[in-house]
Image 1 (spheres, rainbow, N blue to C red):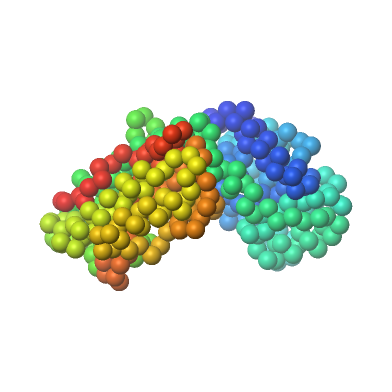
Image 2 (cartoon, helix red, strand yellow):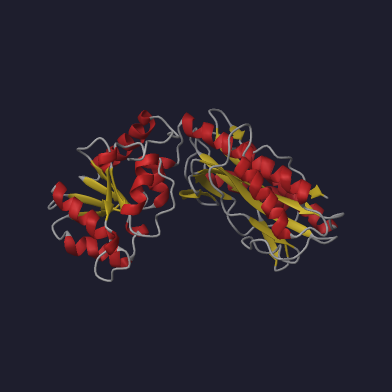
Length: 389
């Protein structure tokens, strides 16, 4: 028996639209074929979300072919047939003897396919920033006549402007993120184990919201006292205690798309210092959002936030956010001073205002937003408050 094609996150026309945009960029660079091995870019171009990128895999986008060809480990090929929009003959599974082989790997199968395409003497795009040095050298040595072009950033800069269909999925993910924050406010209590609270939050994120389940779990960071001065610590084996502060970052996920949110919780009355920082950050958040509109720059948004909190005696050293979409952060624009990327409708960002001031003190708040035609649409809707429990 053969595996059936599963429900598609987007219609075929949406994927062909994305590929057309990519092929236009390829033509500008005089590239005949592009090898895409970054997992998020593969998701964007095919709909594939299975976690198989720990071994070599890639799609080959050819100017002359409507659909890309997906080359991956044979045991993962049924997942690609099931999830990706392409016809099954566009999925090639390479044999198991290439796994753990010190001499050959799956990229050799990709190179064999490129030779069959007749890439010799033509332009070949590679995502060199996502390839190991050894893999990059393999492509160069086995395709000595190809003109290799580094295309590491090509797909991410296409991804930065979402279609209306993508925005719809991110709204669904945002509702799931909000449900996670609401559940956190219910389960974070003195005497409750951090791990047990995370279990309940994760269950909510999987169950989803508005009849739309979460399709994966993104990383969650729960930093409780005294670990609030750093952002990326997961939950511990400790119990929540009276007087503790908890900084929580999570995301709702739909078909690989993430909408992220951060909120700060206080068990008992917060300190004056925390309350003052919260008030400054919320004022800065609103100033930043009020700056969002087509034609403004990422730098404009960041500077609006910074000017506001500095008037109240605080400063944030890290950037204020980044483009968001598939698999959380997108490696393109940043909300930081000096990033002159112009905001355009349907760009989406995580306005991430975490501020880690001392080794044992910091605060978090964030929203996922869309650049609208005349301003901003905030996708996440949780109360912008310091949750006092």
